[in-house]
Every structure is written in C-alpha cells, then in structure tokens.
Image 1 (cartoon, one colour):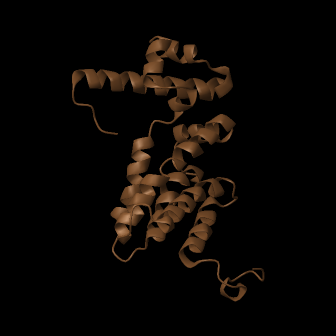
Image 2: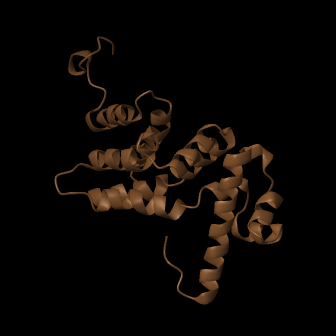
Image 3: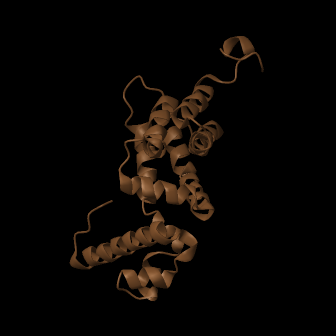
Length: 202
C-alpha cells in the first residue's frame, strides 16, 4: 500500500487501519456473524457513519488489498524472468500469494485470518469475487506482453482460468499440487491419454 504523505491522508489511513484491525480482532474472537458494524466502530472509537465512509460493508473490512493484488498479478506477467512462460510465472505467483495460507509456518495472525475466511461462507465468497475482479487487468497484461489486441480471447481465457486455480487449490488436499496440475494443463493442453502420465482416461 502506498504510504500517505499529507497529514489528512495519514489520519484517514490510520483510521482505516484501526477499523480493519478492530474488525478482524472481533471477528476472530466472536465469529463473523455475531459482530455488528456498530461493534467495530465502537472498538475503533469512531462512529458507524465514519466506518461506512471507509468501508462499504463488513466483508470489505477483512480485505483491504485489492489494488495490491491486481498490481502483483500484472507484475508477475510483466516482470517475469526471461525464459519463464506466462503460465509458469502465474503459477508461481498464485502459489506464493494464494496458497501460502496453507503453509504450516504461517504466523498466528495469518492463521487466524485464514481460519476466519475459510469458515465463513460470506467471506470466502467475497474473497473469490474480489480475486476474480482482476481478470480484465490480467488479460490486458497478457495481451500486451504477447503483442495482441487488448480484447484477445486467448488472453482473456488464460487470465480467467489462471485466477480460478485459486479456488481449486482451496478445495484440494494438497493446494500447491493442485495449482501445479492446473497450470500444467494451461501450459500444455489436455493432450491424449498417452501424453498424460498416471491416468488411462481421456
């Protein structure tokens, strides 16, 4: 997140952070559904009206990284190491930012956040919708990198399916392996049974 420079901007950023911190703390302690906007505002020592100036609803209080997510996806394509394909770069990025939640070494705060999101359908759905909103930006980055028009359908399809691998990972026993398998399919295509080791089905 860009560091605010002006006094007013710093104050707004501090209020926003205080609200987000209070919300997460209360959600983890009491459960998402048991906490109201008034509870959060009171914990952050502001009015509910002030809270709503910063966040449109309860879900948004948990996720405050949309711009950073989009910038990261675009950078994964734009700044990838020479010789790395776009699917390879996106596979590594998705595993780093979306599957790290499964890492046993994750800190306690992040583990608490993960458990909250995983066990709260409203938050899981919101997180997925927010992640998928980056499809157009990612598609444009892919199209620009490959020298095709911004509305190129192949670029749009790759962006769509690359982002969807995150949901697949969170339903899998081994999230990282699930991402690898999905991106291998995106990179190489379906192929024939003989080309797909470990299976006799097409």
